Length: 146
Image 1: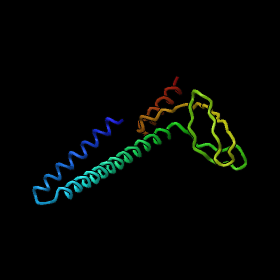
Image 2: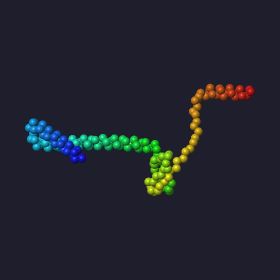
Image 3: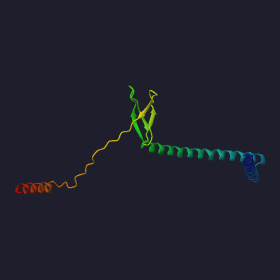
Image 4: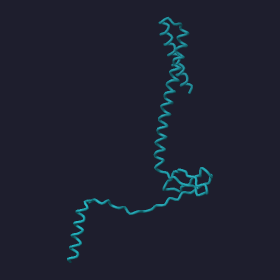
């Protein structure tokens, strides 16, 4: 910690001295050049870290939005069983018990997940009705003849 502080202080003084000598060669006093170098470094440091903070905040917000998007795939909108029927969006997991605290009545509520089945239908591929009608008529006639 102390070593890092000494290195940073040495860099600050060295860069300020370099700026002071460059400005002195242009006719500015050494003290004003040194103070200008310190000021420029502090302004540059603050500008850099402000830009870095803004960039990281934007990145963090994007990650948060991505997390919320993924979270929305694993949650349910449920109503509290109390008389208020307050609706909350809560995360659910299929491998554990699911509980949440109602945002309105502050009671702990259990979520029961039920599975249902349904028969999947196939779409009609041949929608050519005259051809279907002809086959139907032929099959009726052949059944009547036999």
